Amino acid sequence: MVRIKGIGAYAPKSELHNRDFERFLDTSDEWIFSRSGIKSRRISPPEQRTSDLAVEASKKALKRAGLSVDDVDMVIVATSSPDTLTPSTACITAAKLGMDKVPCFDISAACPGFLYALEIATGLLQTGKYRHILIVGVESGTKFIDWEDRSTAVLFGDGAGAAVLTVDEGPYGVLSTYLQGDGRLGELLKIEVGTAYPPGSWGVRMRGREVFRNAVVQMGEAAVKALQLANLKAEDLDWLVPHQANLRIIEATRQRLNLPREKVYVNIERYGNTSAASIPLALEEMLERGLLKEGDTVLAVSFGAGFTWASAVIRWG
Ligand code: UT7
Image (cartoon, rainbow, N blue to C red; front, side, top):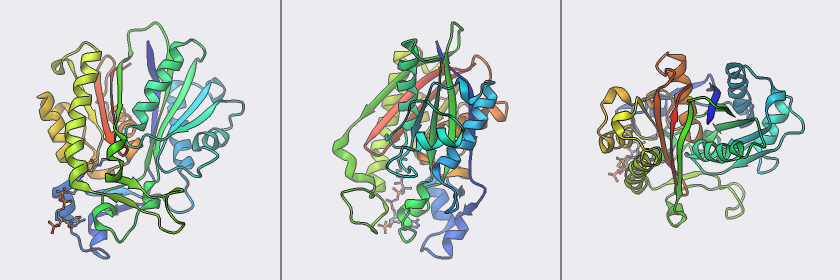
């Protein structure tokens, strides 16, 4: 089975608390926390690139896996906030890690990007052509924020999570993956950077209420689909690890599966929405805190811009 041999995460040191926004935006700690569940988020300074976050997370993942950079046969980075449009953040990350002669590419699938990368890497490892693939979910999305737009500025944070995947005969690994998307609704959540926008008009734009409604439906659908594909029921789960975009969306997903609260991992209050980094950041934190144990059955589920949504069931170990 394809399994996660090592996982690592990194978040920038600098923290922005809800109260900090009160100084320059018409908002309040009370509004932000009650509507989203967020209390603070990490912000990468101008000189810290997306690839720098990816490098830190990757080093930890390799260490946990007991591998060196020479063991990595491919690097896939999921991000919506790349260092540059080209070269890819995967190539920059690989070079910074000291790798040469390694296939490397980015995927753009917004918040579920890590789960998209997981399915792509799983399929490639199953061909037998590669031994170890490094996948990274990383964002410095706050660099695209319009700090005058209170409806988006308060929601996002920066971070990175990486996993080294391998394939072996053991009982642990990826039991199912499910990917989905619907580009017709793309206008509802966008990072306006690219050929469609004039230079200088950057910004994250979101019609929050509509995104919220779609997220609740599709997170639930994705959760059910991955369980079906793994031939499991919700009661077989030890953990639900949902994308951390809004505590109320997380709660709706929990209710859809009828899971007790203690089986749902939540860290949104400290990181905000870190998009593609959200799920690996949570997994690493759970491991670090001794919550994630060998043999645990974990359902990860995510939803984001595109729209894209995705899920995976992993037997941890
Ligand atoms: O990760 C990818 C997927 N992203 C998501 O899933 C995010 C989905 N959406 C959400 O999480 C929520 O829609 C938000 C947290 C973004 C907003 O919560 P909401 O309960 O949907 O609020 P709303 O957008 O309907 O806004 C309610 C009111 C509005 O005022 P009026 O029109 O009722 O007078 C907003 O202008 O709250 C106002 N508002 C704010 N007030 C204080 C919007 N942002 C703020 C703010 N502080 N930061």
